[in-house]
Amino acid sequence: MIEKAVGKSTGPTRVALTGNYAAAYAAKMADIDLVAIYPITPQTTIAEKLSEFVADGELAAELIHVESEHSALSATIGGAAVGARAFTATSSQGLELMHEILHIAAGLRLPIVMAVPSRALSAPISIHNDNSDIMNARETGWIMLNASDAQEVFDMVIQAFKIAEDPRVLLPVMVTYDGFVVSHTVEGVELPDAEAVRSFIPKGKWHALDPSRPSSMGPIAGPDWYYEIKFGQYHAMRDSIKVIAEVMDGFGKKFGRNYSPVVGYMMGDADFAVVTYGVTWGFVKTAVDRARSMGIKAGAIKLNVIRPFPSDAVISYLRGLKSFAVVDRAIYYGAPSPGPVYTDVASALFMSGHAVPALNVIHGIGQRTMYINDFVEVFKELTKLDESKVIFMGVRE
Amino acid sequence: MSSPPSWKELVIGGTIIEPGSTVNVRTGTWRTKKPVINQDACTRCRICWEYCPEGIIQELDKPFVSRKGIKYAVTYEVNYDYCKGCGICANECPVKAIDMVSEYE
Ligand code: SF4
Ligand code: SF4
Image (tube, rainbow over all chains, first blue to last red; front, side, top):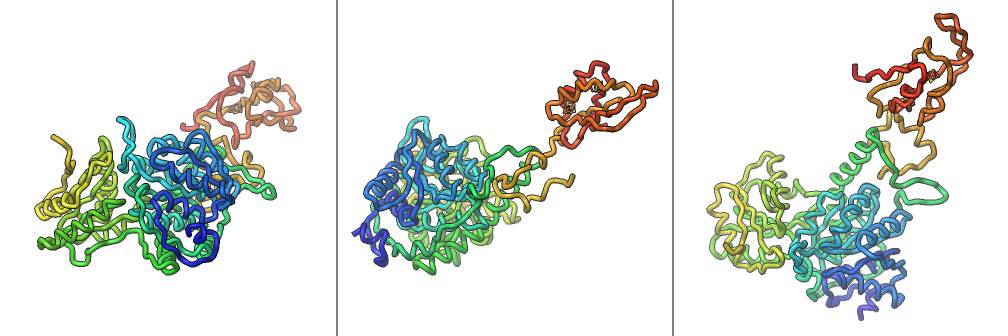
């Protein structure tokens, strides 16, 4: 049934997929030309599924078996550098090993798409999920989308190709989501019609190497040149938020599932809100309902985009509130606040001139269980909050 | 030589799409001291011309008569667009005819 749904024009089909398989199916339906990939928990099933597609002749992509993630992204860059639609995926230590090359992919302005099911970082070793790995990659120049379930993973990988290859953008895009909780959970996913996907993301053209127009990619740039090249990169990243919103809008019109860089839940009359990303979104929405039944005017927002930080949309939700919380599933060691996204939200708010007391909730570190009622407690705390502070939720004193 | 282009005119990613980029990159901006040849003291031995790692000391067909009345057929001049200020010429000049002069005074 799945085979029928992919590659041929059969109309949308609903199938059961894990988040990782959703990423692999999306890459396949995007008709990628090249995948260079190295296995790492919890990403491995993407590598397996794509290898299977290629071995079975369902995907006509060059599959490169590499010896590390550093090489995986390097080979992916090579593919994109010659104009191939190139895809890879990794997690955790793999993303760390890629770190040097992350900057190079962005600096070369190559429209690579990478799926990253997130996982806590060593040491101590943890194969479990938190967002330490992806948060560590925020300043590498990649656009970062964040999905909360398998359907969003599929949809965002499709959107990612369109965003990355847009001539106004030409930046690599990471589709991040929670390891195991999303990557390995089987959910119903609607696979759109293959032709509809292809017409939504026709293959783009960029400054690729071409023997008929010789060029040199990745040369040295001295002090007279480097700054302007990097400013161009900064500018493309900053302005990409408009393209991201446009692509998400177009996706909704074509496939009937609506996306925007930031989504709100019960925010219309909310006095208190929790800012989330990833799987926390599901818990928090239920906590909003429970808090509302207790008479608290609760709401929540979810960031579908981590980079570029969607400041305007976030501020428009938060500026009139009595207080809000940001739940971070990563620790930012030694920073003014321990939560990376809290730090982003706080600086966006500061720059917009709005002051709202804000709670930084650290939770779910190394996949410590989060309960819905934990977030009901957060709403209760918000009703009393008069100055900003940090809570390490559930840590044993 | 015109100044380097604005960020809007640069090819994204710093990709070089035409030959001649070495000519466009003026290594002269690296310099903190510039070599100044004292044409009176210079004996036209050509050693600086040979040693300059950038190859930008120019042997020009400009006749010159020194204050002592010595006649030379050529003059050595530095192309400051590309002289990176390494000082090798000054170090090698056997008659110390080259001074390294600060760019900031
Ligand atoms: S300072 Fe160095 S680069 Fe400049 S002319 Fe002398 S040897 Fe050549
Ligand atoms: S090395 Fe000194 S003397 Fe010889 S040509 Fe150069 S400046 Fe003149």
